[in-house]
Picture 1: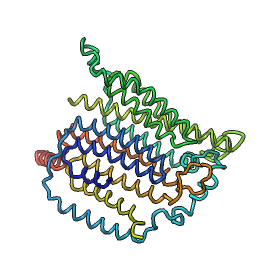
Picture 2: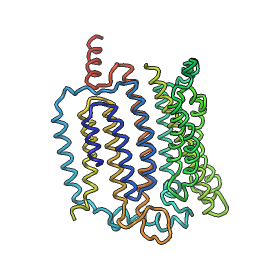
Picture 3: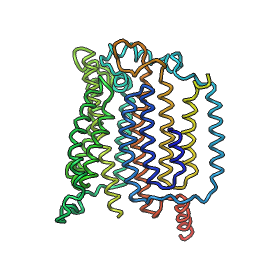
Picture 4: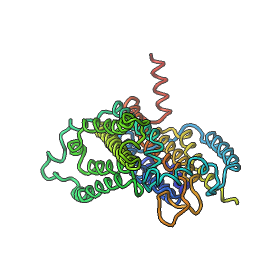
Length: 316
Length: 120
């Protein structure tokens, strides 16, 4: 089914349809991740792929047009290249380890330690969170910095111009609430989305969740607000300077935690020394850096969305 | 067991679909969608490699001994969020290209820039 959707995406010429199908495709792949036991990943994919990235692509289509023009080149050459590459890869898989075998190479090195020791050493049940935030803390910090850099890049390419234009639906009398049904529904939903985001943020140690997912869910609440009430109101709610400051602050919290553990005489991002008991220290450390991750991810997503929409409105 | 390699073949089909979109389509937005499909195929490959048959999700629970491998989950979880950030960067580049050239079709952009080169 996933392959069918992917091929439909390739064939379709209407870009609007492509983007919509791509959202469905992301949701389907999230289902596959659930089946494969990767609940945290499925969570992220559903929030990011089916939610935020679809909105980003739609915002792009507003300013770039909805139809794809037929290519002047014959599709046969690329098709041939693809078939040959695919055949070579299939041939390569014949030597690959079989699906689901516990003796596969990936399961025999560090994974054993994560599964066996991490519940007692780090003290939290969700192994994904403990690997993400503690054992591979450097790696995750790099990812957060990449996301922050993406925001810097987007903001240097597109400027946010939310406060320049007069709010449209306030100036005209009878049309003062252009989409009343949508706005009332959004008002009902947004508080629950925000509460859910906070739950995912702080419960990530015990169940599926964590800073990445919570950040995206939080951002999607603000994006929903911006979609139904207009960009100006949303920028009034979350000003641009706040986005810049908070996105940097999230990275600073993460990096600062590492510096604090260094000042206390341990290695960078070693949380054992943050409290009297190493397990408690690990717990505090993970909570703090997940907070940093959540803040950065949420503000970066909101910032990118604002930049896209103000560009799209400006091009009309 | 023929089907024990089935996960890799699904990944390859998806990967090639994305690859084909990137090289055969002239539209820049569609190229980005193709890149995303390619990316998802890599995600599915990692996650399927981490699966252990009979295992459960890697969250400690009573009466469970066998868990799937948490490491690929961590790598892919962060990769998804980084992926959307880089996609956004690509899309904003496309918006600027559209502003500069008035089109997002690769062949038309090439035409315009060759004409500009000839003119001056």
